[in-house]
Length: 405
Image (tube, rainbow, N blue to C red; front, side, top):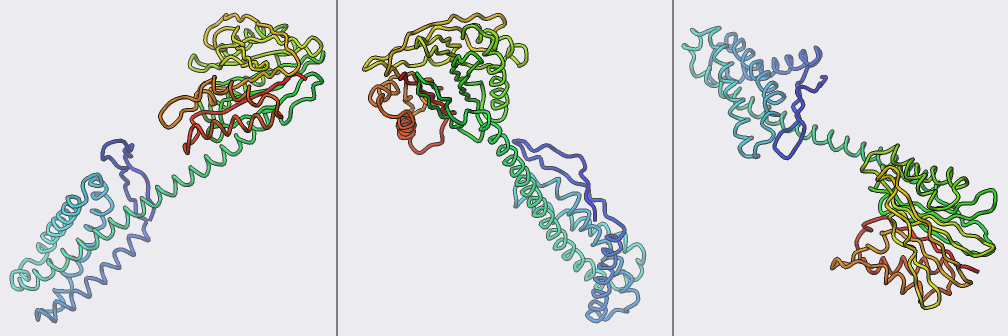
């Protein structure tokens, strides 16, 4: 038996369900007809002995009744019952039974017209045939309808699992690709220690950080947070990373780099797609840091027990055509600690809704500024996790640390 969809109804908030039309093959029709032929013969034997009726006429009527019952049950279960699938269970069961019984009685009336004289002569035998077949039709139709509902549910569950497995495989591939885009290790820099981490809230995310170097040995730092989450954000992040790496060698200042990225992103994505970014370059000879903050959280500079914010820059990248960005500068000293981070840290909510905040982050950085950078990162991430409690991360978490030697 082959099944083809017919007039599918999209599931929504109401009670609509997909309706299927069954197109049976010839083998199924032959088998179904033979099965009910056998049922008719069995009933004929029982009725003829029970009612003392002649076997020939009873056999003819019984076989015809059985075929009517069989196809009435089949049509009701496969075509009519799915139309009632959205009704409450008790009401649906009553309507299912009434439909089958009414179909059987109507079909029985047609059969009786074939041999009305015999029916009038043997009303008891005819009533027994009608009653037996009506009960059998209802039982078979309900059983067949229940089987079909269970089969559709199993098929739907299997499709969901198959789609989920496919999505998991795609996310796994995307996660591996995104992991390859992030730096595997910090480059060795004589005047600077570097460490960074990015932990997506789901399989893939929109946070990005990078270490950049050009042919002249100029060192660049980049951190960004693109709008959205999931695969779409990861794709935008990959595009942004490629743009940063291709434009960094030719941009004279971080502000110029941000302006170039803004034009590239504005021209290649919708208005709803944008990114915040903090871009910086470090001169290892003079220990001078130049930066621009494109709508991102200002980097925190820790010097002893004092902290400063690097907030010069402009608007997020990709929102407006022709945006310009100012470039800030600071001369760093040995021991200074620079922290670049995304809002997955500062906006991490406590169970009562209070955010972790930039000030708590600054306090942790001041308290542990002399420890190894990897240890400081673990301390910060542990504090954020403890602050949020036993809930899933609400956003991607990225932290980059740079300390002057």
